[in-house]
Structure formats: C-alpha cells, structure tokens
Length: 577
Image (cartoon, rainbow, N blue to C red; front, side):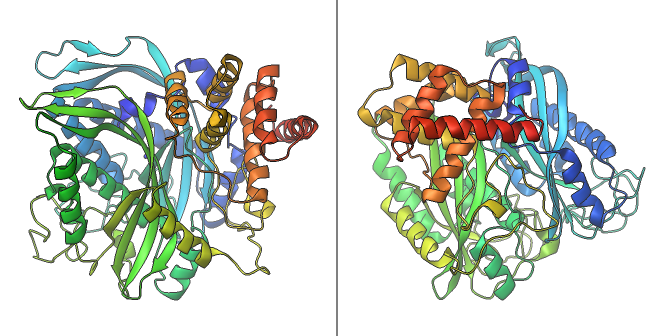
C-alpha cells in the first residue's frame, strides 16, 4: 500500500474505463460480504460504513496535499502513516508537493470482508477521479503533471478487533472522537485518549485503516494467512496476526527507502539488526562513484504479503514479499537530485525475525512504529534504543526486525523460498476449505477450488507472467503489444507501466512470479481470461495472445476458447459480464 501521486501513475488514465472495467476484477456480490460482518455484528450498516469511509478518504487526500499526516493519525495504522510521512519528507527535499483538486468518489463498495480471526477486516473498492499535478513548495507555481481529470481505483482495508460492535450514530476515530468515551481526540505519546486512556488504534473500539492496495495488485485472500502462519499462531503465539506483521514490514520498507535515499542507516536502526545495517552501509560504499550516487526514489508499493513462517532454532522468521516500483534518482556532487525516469518494478523478499518465545501484544498490533516495550512513538531516528524507556529495539527481543532483504530472483531469496515450500506443504489428506465466516471473490482462485496453499494471483502478477512468456523469443510483435495493452487496461494498468514491463522482460530482467504447479496454472489462465472479458468481449488479438500463452503449457487453441466460454458463463452468473 504508497505515495498518492505514484499510486495513480500506472492506473488507467481514462477515468470512465478504469471505473467501469476495473470494478469487474475480483469483486463479488457485496451483500455476501456484508452478511459476513453482520453474523458477529448485527448492527453493522454498509451504507453508514461507506459514508464513514468517504469521510476518511477525503481527510487523507487533504492531509496528503497539505503534507501533514498528523491530522489523520488517529485512524490509520503506523504502516500507512509512516509511508505517507516518509514520502512527504522526500517531496519536501525535492521541493514540491502534490496539488489535488476536485476529488470525486465515483463508486465505493464493499469488496471483501472477513470475521473470526484476531481482527475483522472490511475492504472497500473505491473508484475516484481528480486533477493532480506537482507545484513548487517555494513559489506555489506549476512544476509537472497533466492538468486534466483522471481516474484511479484502489482497495482500502480497515481492521477492527473481532467481537467489537457497531453503535449506531456514535462518532468515532474518523469523526475526531474517542470511540470509547466520546471526547475529542487528543492523543498522548503512547496513542491513548487523554480523557479515558483507551488505546485509540488498538482496533478494540473502532475501525482503523490498515492498508491501501493498487487495483492491479489487489487479490482476495484469507486474512488469517497461509498454512505455516496458521500453524505458527496455533503453536506459538495465539495473538499472531497477518495485519500486524504486514504493517510492521511496511514501516520497515519505508524506513529502509529513506535510509537508501540519504545513504544513512539512522532511519532503520530501531528496525533492522546491527548486522543488516553494517551490510547495507557496505553496499552503499561499493555502489557509489566519485561524481554521483544513485538510489531508488519515488517509490510506490503495490502490496505487502506474508508468504509464511520459518525458524532457525533461536529466532522465528517471517517471509514477507513486497512488490514496489521506483525510478532511479541520481544525487550529483553539488547535492542536486535528478529523477532519471527509468521506471522499474521490483519484488523483494524481506526476512523479519524475532527471538523464539516473543509473542504479539494484540493491543498494539498496528502501532508498529511505536516502542513495543513502553508504547512511545519512535520519533527520533538516531539510535537503536527507545528514547523514552531505553529498550534496545533492533535485537528481536520485543518485535519483528529486519534480518535480510533480497530481490526475489536472487539465490538467497530462492533458498529461503525453497525452505518455506518444504515446510508449508500440507499433508496429502489436507484440503484447504473456505471459512464459513470469510468472504472471497469467485473471479480469482478460491480455497474451495484448490488442494494446495499456493499464493493467489493479482492481475499484475498474471500480466507480468504473460509478458515474460511472450518475450521468451526475444521480441514482442506489434499485434501482441496491442493485445497486451488492451488486457492491461481492463486490469487498470497503464500503457507506461506495460511498456516498462516489456522493456524489462526483453532485457531478461523482469522478475515475474509464475504459477507453482499445474493447478495454479489453470487458475492463472482463468484469471487472464476474466481480465480479458472485463469489457465484455475478447477480441481476436487478445484470443491469439491467450492462445500463445497457453501453448507454453500444452493448451490447445480450442482449450482456450472453451476456457473463455466457461469464464464468460461464470461472470454472467455473478452479473459481471
């Protein structure tokens, strides 16, 4: 989940097309999602929730444009707050801010809901339009960007402790009131209400925004995690939850991005081991040259996913995949920073660890940038210890810290993933079943359709897989390019992003995930058919590209035609084609 400008750079520019077509991908009947929540919270009102979401949405846009995220801190997780705040610091260093005007929500609807774990989760699909361009911080004059209306689609996920109940008409965090006592919010340094001392962002009383995902990266998933994560919770840590570790990983990612930008380990001293920080500083020295230094700037995170859990005998280890994009920024000798504009997509494996026996404090599950020992905010990024209580925070004695970060295609990452695959493979007798209290879309692989625990595919996963396959012969022909662009638009992925993926693939450098087995291949092919069908018709060029993709996996053209016919019937049944 992203700098607002960069989330939208890469989403389809035609607003009506983006809103209409992206809504087809991964959205099921919202009434099923609402029923899920109402089983445990009978007073949950979808219309009221969507109205509250609209208030949160506009507050965050305003805070972003004003470069002041403190005004929304009470209802966002530390992961969301940190990524915005650190991106704003980068904007200020570069002398600009995003100017946004005439923001309109065109559609907001519940896309997914889950209940019964540590947290209830509600995800809203929002399609909106706005005018967005950069202006100078010094003079307020225009710098860059098109002064025209464009659209974007995102998925906003909110969490609340399971068992919490809706109180109709009672204001809460989004409205600026403590949901426990009703007093106007004045947070103290530990995130408590100054009137009643309730932990405001614990999720115990109200919904907290925990994640924002680009439409092209979103995929319905089981919020309780994969098999190894569930086993870890059952055997070692009853309060362990996916939301906390993904939020923590997000904070760590943005702290590392800041460290890379500054070539200074101070931003991550509290969240990465001393060994990792030393290796990172060594890497900077090896990469630097006499007259300039490069770093990945303007970062945009597509998604953060927990892949599974391991251990090394002394530490518990969490494997977290982060998908992100950036352009190379160059720092000249005189301190001038230039964006070189060479957009690239990245997949990184972050290995997070903590000492065996440490357990999760569920009350601070999404206060992941606060000291886990005393709850104070980690405000001074100059030491590995808490400024308030003195606890050393980068050893894994209290919470998850970064042990290692590698490109997914590297030998180091592949070795971790091989270990995870061996551990995460379920016994032959076990078949994943969808929880009766979880809602999932029928347009992407559901747990009831599979006998394995392989990762779900997002539209961008499947598109990157398609591009790598098509580029295997060393070129992408004009007709293939046109068909891929059309399919990408249906998934809300822009032409510049597609061209960047193609260029990277032709260089042999596109690290794209691939289906791990034949069952997953069928599911990924079904997803590509769904995306192609999102505008109601599969043109000849699209059919040819799908057939070419399928040929690499022993699909005949007739098989592809039959698949498209079946998926069209399925989409019609759910009112999506």
